[in-house]
Length: 453
Image (cartoon, rainbow, N blue to C red; front, side, top):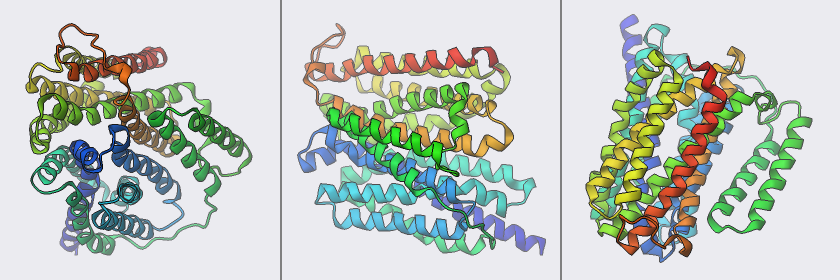
């Protein structure tokens, strides 16, 4: 009987890993194809980047929604809904790839569906895997996540470079093959009936969308709408008995500073990563497949190594040391592109390794620091809010960079070492990125310097 349970648990982890792999891979798979999409539809980067922004925004909102209702609705129902939505969005993109609004709708649906995996995966492991083997399961899933993120640009570049970018919508359909096996191994559940704050979720989603549109189009009407919606959300939170966002979290200054730091740094790096394929295409005329395999892949693969080192450094030297290391690596990576954007492709590849590596340290420092501000009964809501804010910031960062790449005032050469007029735009963008990273670092040290252990 025990052997049978072990075999069943192993199969569950295997199929869950397959679901996780395809869910995570879709986050990075389209990055390298953004210039191809812009060329196919004859649109500017500000519009093409919404291919990823739509996914990131709906993914962030989905993480918050699934996490909020997971205790009141069975995991089977949520997982089934999420994966079927993910598959439906993939079919919409595959069949409607010739119409750009259809592509955006498909990516939005994919984000809503794929976000079910990170929202539910921890709960599923706790309920299915016995306590003595949960560490191994979490470690395996973490490796699958890193591998999926690393392989995404390679697969995306190969498919886009040698076939067509629209076929990227077909790959997630393979994950549906694992769904019946995962559902079969989930335990029966009893759920409590509790009202879900739909009004709060809608106000938050609409406010986020308005702000993302502002970062792309720079029309003040979108910023005004966003501020009005967030004001209504704040009023709603004060009046609602069980609001979508936990009000007690907004009274914790150190917690909020940590969340803002994570969002700012992760959003900035996400914007930088989305810019790199445009840089390689415009400055070096590099094909999509090579961008994915030679430029992005080494960086995403380095996350595995630096992620482990970041955890060890945080445990031994404290969160401040991990944050300083991460910020230093990101700064050096940005400086390379600032001064040598048009010098040689391997400079950009080195920058990606340093930036991704630094991001691993930053994620570790932010997660550990934010967790230290929360009581045990606040951990679920608090860490869920952190994940939501970071996913959201990544989408806004990608949208904002797309808008900035269309601004003519960024074209003037500012750095003497960059001689190419085309490369000047991308070099100048690094000044903005570095200012945002510096602000995030200062904010973190202001609130966490005294409690670095």
